[in-house]
Every structure is written in structure tokens, then in C-alpha cells.
Length: 221
Image (cartoon, rainbow, N blue to C red; front, top):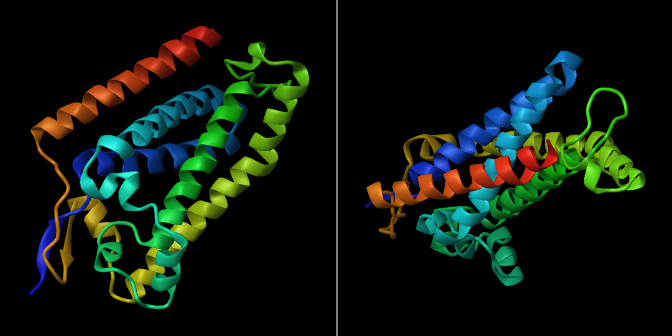
């Protein structure tokens, strides 16, 4: 008999959709005109805040949002690819989904950080550029423009393609990220998602926002 499990807690869902909006905004402001470069920077700060929050939430968040629940050993990945997945691997992130999550987090972190140190010598200089030498700043700019942005776009495209692929197989991955709940074949432990955990998430997010503001924006200003 099917069971309903709270897989994605509210903080994780908000992180997901807000980061998606930031990525769309970052791509748009990078291409629709130089007057939007300030908004590009602001969205970069917002993305960095969200990423820092997710790194912390990966250790203290709901059960299925914790990194410890989707760091898989090579043997588990092989078993999944052979169709012999452990039931828990079908509740939260699958081994392939987990690889996608880690790749996206790393790519976005690299993109944001290189943006902080970049200097295109025309329109924008990152707030932390003055702390590195010219060669480092230009290298960061090169990665940000020539490598990082295309890596992020490619990962987003793969992510969307995977969602559509599973949708064709009658597995809706979007609904659980909206409602938080997922139908499972057998009972499973739900993620904690109550007032206490949400308050903790708000405190962590505020701390991350403060770190970005005082450690990046004000320091660089």
C-alpha cells in the first residue's frame, strides 16, 4: 500500500526555487544589456547566500536533504544502474540525482566565487578583485565567462532533460519539490518539517546573508 512521505522540507523547497530564479536572472542580466550588470551582481550575492545556506542545511536539515543520505558508495551506484536500487535510493535523491546535485552546487559556487574576483576591464570589477593580483583576476574572469557559465547552462539543461525523461516514465519529480510530499511503495521516515526546523533554517539563512553582506559586499566596497 502506498505511503505519503514528507521528502523535501519547506526550506529545501524554497532554496530550490529561489536558486532557480537567481540562475535565470543571472543568465538574463548577463546578456540583455550592460546596464543590468548591477543586478547581475546583486543576484550573484543572493545566489551565494542560498548556496551557503544549502551547504549548512545539508548537515542539519531534513532527513532527505542531508548530504549523508545521498552520498553513495560506488557499489550502490552500480547496483542502481543495474536496476537493483535500495528502496531508500528511490525516495530522496537517486545516485544519478545526487551526482547532479553535487555537480550543480560545485559549478554554481565556482561561478559565483570567480565572479567576486573577476575584472572584465570594461563594465564590472568584482568586490574582492582588489585582494588578488591582476593575473588572478583575469583568470577568474576568463573562467567565469568562457567556462563557468556554459558549464552551469549545460548542467541546467541536463537537469531539465532528466525531469522530462522521468515525466515520460510517469514519475513526476516536480510535484514533490512543490508540495514536499512523495508517494512511496512502502512506509519511510519523513523529513522533519515543523516550526522549529523552519525557524532554524531562517536563522541559518540570516547568518549566511549577513556573512555575504559584511564579508563580501561591505568588505569589497
